[in-house]
Image 1: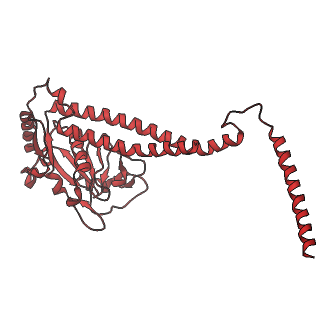
Image 2 (image 1 turned 120 degrees about the vertical axis):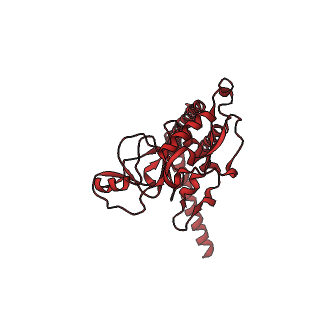
Image 3 (image 1 turned 180 degrees about the vertical axis):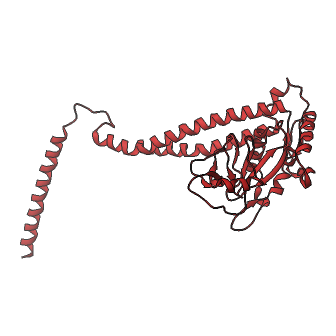
Length: 320
């Protein structure tokens, strides 16, 4: 009975990660559709169009060449948003969307970290197991793809859609599997952009955007036209705060579930050990001692063996 209960508990615990995944997806969907800040918005009076015009003005001063013309967003990716919001393309919020080097560099024992898909996990850049390149090669690669604090990274090959905000001044270079998004202005909230990207990755079928055979790849041109809901900047801050709060809550539950799963995995052996120590059920002092039971079993065995011998003799005589 106890082991059956353990199996039930284990099955329920194993189902929680899927519930938490759906919870996070629901939070992201509520965040970028305005539902998360519905009550907060009633007391605010911001002008998102005016704020975006400041971003657009800044973008003009930092973008040149063919990328100066803003790519329009895909209308097909729109969904209901508040009247005080409007749609822009990811291109309109960035001054550059570029991927890392397309050739494999020369690796060395130590030097400048070289970041690929495997080094971006759980929303952060993991420098614990990176490869390294020389300072000279890093300088050359940075001419095209220079990473700075506050930029947003997104994996575009292999495992698609892992993101991380750069929160370090440490220098590093990127492989082609990682794209770099640089904000068009200091007013752009890249953490809000990250929330919108995560919602897109989780809910929109990206298979139509992925090309290639052995290595699947998300094209930079597709990212430029991604539809981003633009909310007033103060509301964007509040949305990011709430998303962080809900995600921290989910992370806490996830950690507790992992601990509980580890304990449950040890329960079976613990229960069996208790059973054979006599600790699983209450002990009745009026019960016959085990020694007496063993003596009766031994006696019964002797009697059974004696009867078997006698039976053999009878059969032998009858056959003669």
